[in-house]
Image (cartoon, rainbow, N blue to C red):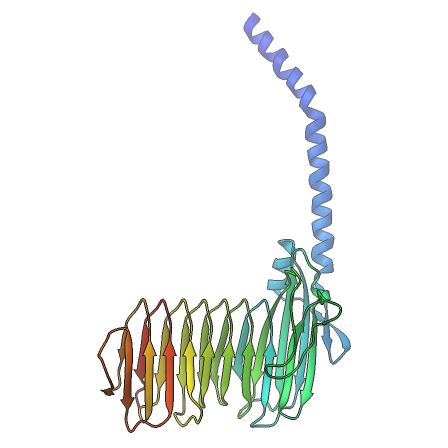
Length: 311
């Protein structure tokens, strides 16, 4: 009886001591819930910047989920006409680039900006119209005021992130006959079956590109999977990576001089080849069909596959 009494008194004392802590914890949880609710409601509306005009759009479920995980988000939308034979060019740094074919007469571009430490609104999406088409860039705050980040077509322009962790994911709808050029540094590049030529590059990411025309692809850390609809390229065609395999799907009537090389991997081909020089499983130089135009494939760690598409 005495032991039960002592135990009861001990439990009562512990309860009196911990009660204020429990109340404090409940109060903190209540404040956290209220803060999370306000944040979620506020992130249900995001600002879209297009041609320097602002509009309001509803956030997607993905954006709401990111907000709940502590990320802030911002959305950009642009649409405009790009003539067939000209190029819609996307330049990003952190984030994926996805291009899809479109039956509409306009190019449509959507960019989702999200960040944990950095404010997505600090990253500007710039649209530059020029004679060759339209270039759209993710422009981060400049680290060097004497050399500001900018947006220019092709290989021109300067961009750096200054430890900015904002991620910009681009989705592009490309009309028939419009060329596509996609660039990023940390992210994947992927396309659907585009009708125009495609030229894509990344550094840390994989590439999947498909075109009814000519496709070109380069990365450093990632694999390349490419499908070409035509085999009448003029300049030398290159597919290069360092860490990843290369799979190239070509039309059955392809005529080309092939140079393929891998250090840690093998080379496989569906095409009959006339081999030039020494035969090796890691280095291949040969002729497909009547030869002529040049095709170069190179990786360090990965296999190389030349696939002959069924007619």
